[in-house]
Image (cartoon, rainbow, N blue to C red; front, side):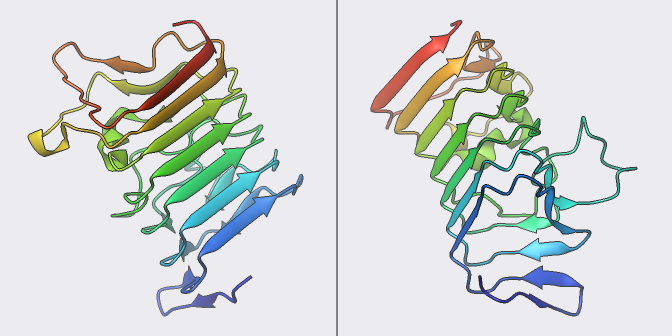
Length: 203
């Protein structure tokens, strides 16, 4: 792995790292603690079979409880990540909330979420527009997942009216009754969608 460095603001930076794979680390609970961490060149991120991995950056338990702590938050900068795979994360309940550094994940075009049995939702409503560039989404075997996103409170602007999604694969989500929970006044358009496969859900 590329050697990290710290700058004057006590940030951990991996300036040239392009691919990060974290796999089969059964006791890993965090990547680092307390610091801001930046991956300005990272394009591919895979996290698999790390059942105790609770947060990428673990901060004080007093401000981030087990129930509300997101895996990615404002201390993690991933401005150029294009592919992300998360699998076998037994403690994962929330991937994001509204606390992200500016421009993080806005280039993400492929995402796979597999075997995360405690995960409740993929996209918070106030962040859905961040992921308009997403082209391929796969979600499988997440037994607690209720919805992909809740769009009831989302305020769409005209320039964000068309998503770039091309492929959607959903399987093994027994509690999901609708993919997008949206307000009747919200119009969504997926003009580039070509492949959809949905199975073993309650829709």
